[in-house]
Image 1: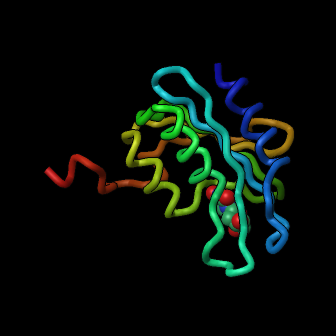
Image 2: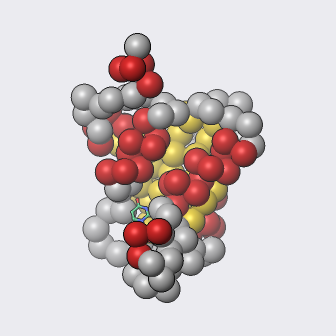
Length: 130
Ligand code: THU
């Protein structure tokens, strides 16, 4: 069932606004309610104000009324794997736990799958505040 999510991430990559890095990224998250929410990176002339694709997808999910992520796909170009950046790993952690499945994709499809626990070990999440 990950094909639809991967397709959404690749389609979102085509919408990226990345005139500074020329590095388009697309992301799609599947909410626990079944919805698919996509996002792309949106850069800014004031560089630090740019937004990652995962952050855009998470915003779309929250706007869609969901707050639990069960699966993620990220798509980007190039030889190296486009894994979520450190900040986005933490953003994903807010809405999921170690077992979250993250599909890392290229323009042609899936390249590797990892869990959030692998990418962000010993993480700090909402439960740690208790
Ligand atoms: N980028 C993402 O959107 N997601 C990632 O996981 C890695 C990096 C974006 C940020 C910036 O617009 C461009 O890729 C180059 O770093």
